[in-house]
Every structure is written in structure tokens, then in C-alpha cells.
Image (cartoon, rainbow over all chains, first blue to last red; front, side):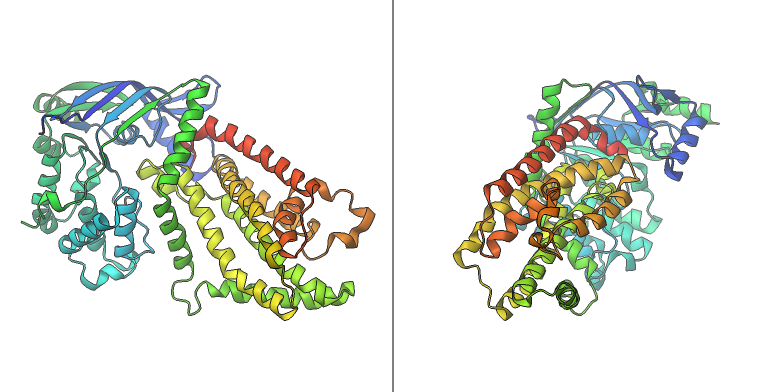
Amino acid sequence: MSEMGGAQISVQNVSVDFPLYHGTARSLKKTMFAAAAGRLGEDRRRRMVVQALRDIDIVLRSGDRLGLIGTNGAGKTTLLRTIAGIYEPTCGRVVVQGSLNALLDPMLGMNADLTGRENIMLRGLYNGFAKSEIAALEEDVQSFAELGAFLDLPVRLYSSGMVVRLGFAMATAIRPQVLLMDEWFLAGDQQFMEKAKDRMAGMVRGAEILVLSSHAPTAVREWCTRVIWMDHGRVREDGPAEAVLDRYLQRAA
Amino acid sequence: MDMIPDTDLPRLATSTLVVTADVAGYQRHRAAWTDVTDGIKLWRLALALGWLDIKLKYRGSMLGPFWLTISTAVWIAAMGGIYGTLFHIDMHSYLPFLALSLVLWTALGGLVSEGCTTFTQAEATIRSLRMPFFLHAMRVFVRTVIGLLHNVPVIVVVFAIYATWPGWAGLGCLPGLLLWTLDAFAACLLLGTFCARFRDIPPIVNSIMQIVFFVTPIMWQPEQLGARGWWLPLNPFDSLLEVVRAPLLGQAAGWHVWSLALGFSALMCAATWLLFARVRSRLAYWV
């Protein structure tokens, strides 16, 4: 990486609580999830909260490849969202130096009613690109996603494979210094993944720091050098990829 | 390889993100201010989002957003006919007043009801990438302005039919519109925040706005109330409408109207700022 590569992530003593406010199905789901994981608590003002993350300390420097593993509800995605600045922590501090791209859900804020082209334009604008850069983005996505005339049709008319291609092409067309990635990203169909592999590898190699969250150890083994095993919102183990993964698999078996 | 050389791809601007919990009061205000200024820097995105919202709403329809123009025109013609007859008013003075008031009210009322969904509507975006929250308020604002512009022709036509023309005095509406802009952002942040936290608020707001429509001089003129209208100054929508409407009807909005409008606006902006600075960091958890 470049010598000036100053990318750095520092997560200091971070805890995240989810408030349980709305008596809706959504909150109910959260409640049940949390109850299953044994993490229901009350905060200082005695409101019901889900303790999603507890006392997390992580420092990542240029060149680091971190994998987050753990069961559903262990806090992997919440940690990614916290590093991305989406959830501001209940206590602690997050500092991220360097451009950041977080690939968190397959739709990535795509609007299914808009055409592929309109979604690409919006993605460019979200990233603060100038007109010429948006044109370059569009060209790149167009040539990779191979949507042909569908690019000018609403995304809701696409087959699920086409949506993945568009999402993947857009996500990988932007090369950040800090790349945060959730597992959905590795869940394309086999044929597509063959084609996507090079492009994916290019993006991952281009990033100074990678944080990959997955409960598929194969992907983590392939990309990551360090692994953090999350359990009930805490760091359970932190160490070299192979060692932590082996113990995780033993435990799961 | 399918890859285009990296150099051709757009680069993200390098930045430093610092997020700290439990910050002191003044830091919250600074974070809120940064949110607003960062949002303003994304004005092109706000324009695109607002415009696409309108485009989407009318995609596939032949007249597109001009359905707004038509429905307003029909509404005014019908109301003008009925109320003009009921109140025995001279159409020459009533219809321009009604047309202008209804169009302005449509914008105000629309902003208030859409302001409620400022953040809840943007849930997917808020959860997938860090964006200034002010951006979502700008999006609602852009949408409202586009709607308002589509209704302007109705006013022009009615004014032309009744040969009412404010002349240069009409420019007096500009300070009023400026105040509206400020209030619009404040209303979106205020209502958007409240409605993200308390999901019962949007229906309450909507039913209140229906009542406000009747107790605000829109279909009737304040003079018709006479002395019985002593409570009118208590209605913020009355003075706010008047600072824009009066100049366009060739009158000047008096200082008392202006001081009421400024007073109500200052109260709302202050309340909004205190609330927004306090809970901005919680919004992502609420939507």
C-alpha cells in the first residue's frame, strides 16, 4: 500500500444499546432475538434496551484484514454499522481515518422503483462524485453488470440475479481505503461468483483495511488474517485467523 | 478480466470520521451544525432525490406532475363557485385571494404532512450509509417546492382573468418566502424527529392540519370575521400565510403580522435546534 496510507480504525471501549420503544412487530422481533441471546437489560433511565455491543476495543491499521465471526445476533452487523458511523455508540469512541465504503445490505439503499441508471446516479451523488465521475461509474457498472436494456427499466422488474449483478457492480466500482463488508456479499450464484471473483479481489486488495463479517468460515479463511469471534455483543476471542476459526468451528460442532 | 483499471474509477474523498458517545452539550451543537453544513454541501443529491420522488410518483401518467396543476385548478373553480355564492362575495376580489391562499396552503400543509415522514421514509438509506440527517429535510423541501411551482400557473391564470396584478409590490413576498424556507427545514427536522420516535404523531398532525385549514383564512377572508376574529393572531399559519400572500395581492404585510410570523418562526427554529442537537445521534436507532 502507499507509504502515506494512513487508513486506521480505532474502536475504543464502545458499547451500543438499542432502545426498545415501539410496541410493533419489529420491536417484538428484536425483543425476542435479544431474549434468546440473553441480553435484555435496562439503561440508566430504566428504559428497556438490547445490549447489542459491550466494551469493544479494536485497533486496525493499514494492511489489516479482519474477519468477524459469530452466530446470528452476536453483534457483527451492529459493529460494522457502528464503525461506518451509522449507529453512534452509547458509550465509547470510534475513529476512522480514510475513505470508507460499507457494503451492508444487498440493496444498499437502492430504490426498486427507480431504473438501474437512476440508482447508479444516486449512488454517485451519495458518494459526492462530480458529473464526470458519475459518468465513469455508470460506464463501469454498465459494462460489468451486463443488464443491457434493463438498465433503463425499474429495478423491481429485474430478476434476483440481475439485482445482485447491479448491486455488486455498483459496490465494487467504488474503491475505498476502508472496506466494511457483510456476508450477503459472498452469496451470489456460483456462475456469477466466478466472474465476480477478480473484480472482488481487486477491490479487496485495493482497500487498506478490510473488515468482513460472516458466519461462513471459508470466506473469512480466504480473505482475512485476523479474526474476532463475537459472542453476545462482546469480543470472545481475537487472534490469528486460523487459530480462532478452528476453535470457533470446534465449538460449533 | 472484467476490471477496468483502477485509475478510471472514481475515488472517494479521504476523510476522518470521529464518533464519540456522551459528548458535552456544546459538542452536540457542533455535531448538529456539521450535519446541517454537510447536508447543504450535498445539495445536488437533495435536488436529485426530490426530483426523482416527484418523477416516481407520476411515472407512467401522461400529464405527470401537471396533474397537480389540474387538480388545484378544479379545486379552486369548485370552491370559488360554492363559497363565492354562499358568502355573497364579489368574485373579482374573492377568487384571486382564494387561488393564492389555496396554492400556498397546499405547499404548507403538504410540507407539514410530508415532514412527518422525513426520516422514517429514508430508513433504508439511514441504515445503510452515514449521511447528514439534514439531507432528508432538504429532500422534502425540494419536493414541496417542485409541487408549489406546478401550481403557480393556476395563480397566474386566475390573476390574469380578474386582471389582478401586484406589480413590483409583489416582490415583497421574497422575504416571506425566505422565512418559509427556514421554517420548512425546521419543520421537517422537528416533525421528522418526533414522528420517528413516536409513531402516533403523523395521524395526529394530519387531523390537526385539517382543522387548521378551516380556522385559517384560506376559504374566507379575515375581514368577514370582524371583531369575532380576535383569536386569529394565535394561529401561526395566519401570519405565516399573510407575509407571503399580502404582497402578492398588492398589499403590504404590516409590522404586527411580520412580528408574529418572526416570533412563531423563532420559537419553532429554537425548539427544533434544541431537539435536533440533543437527539441527532439517536435518530438511526429510531427509524
